[in-house]
Image (cartoon, rainbow, N blue to C red; front, side, top):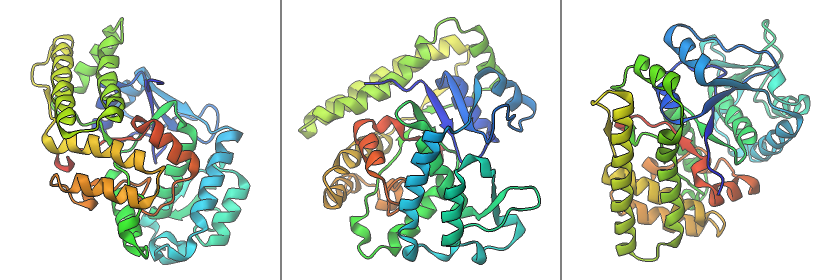
Length: 343
C-alpha cells in the first residue's frame, strides 16, 4: 500500500496555525497549500515563514484535478434543496463572513454552476469570488480531495467548522441515522504543543534520514491496515496493545532526536476507538448506509456519540464513488488535525 509522506492543507492558501506547522515539521516530508497560479507565494511571517521555507510547497490544481473537483461539486449541488441557508450567499451578506476564493483555483464552468445554485456572486473588487463561510469550506475541501488523490494526506485545522457543517447536514436528512458518516484518523497521537517550533526546525535542519518520522506515520498506517484482518474482540485488543507499544517506542526515539523530554504520547482508549471506528466506517461505505450505521453503532457503544465521530467527508455531504473507494482502500488519506480537547 502507498505510504503517505506528504500532506495537503486546506481550506486556506496559507498556514496560520503554529500547531499545524509543528505537526508538519514532526511528521511530513512536505506540506502543500493550494495556490491559484504558478509562482504564488503564501502569506506567512515570523517563525511560521521560516518553518514554511523548510517543508512548505504550493500545489496549483491542474486541469485533471479541476475536472475531478468540478464533478464532486456538481454532485454536491445536485442536492441543493436540502442545503441550509448558511450555504447561500444572499443569507450571509456581512463583509466579515464572506469567504473569498481565488477564481483561478476552479474551472469557469464550476463557477457558473455555483452561481446558478446561488452559492456565489459577481467578482469582488479584488477579483476574488465570494462565497459564504460554509460554502467556501465545502468547496475548498472538495478541491483539496481532488488534488490529494491517494498521494497526499488531507490536513485541516478547521475540524470544528467542518464538524458543524456535517452535523447540520445530518439533521437535514430525512433519515439522519443512515448518513454515510466517517471519522478522521487522528494526527494528535503526539502532543506537539509543548515542543518549541525552534527545536522542530533544528530537528529538520539536522535530519539526514527521515526514518524516525516515517516510522511514526507507518505505525498508524500499518495499524489501520491490520484492522482489515480483525474478526474478534480479543484480536482487536491485542492489536491495540501492540500499536500503543510501538508508538511509545517511536516517540522515545523522537525524544532523543529532538532533545526535548516533555513530548508525550496522548493515545487514550477513546483515541484508539476512533482509529478503529475510522476503518470500520470506511469499509462499510462500500456496502451501504445501513452497514455504516452499524459500524458507528459499535463505536458509539464504546462511549462515543455519533456527533463525536462525524467527519466532513460523510454526514450527507455526498461522497463520490471515487472518494468512497479512496476512503475504503486508504483510510489514512483522510487525516485531520485534532487538538487534545477534541480527542
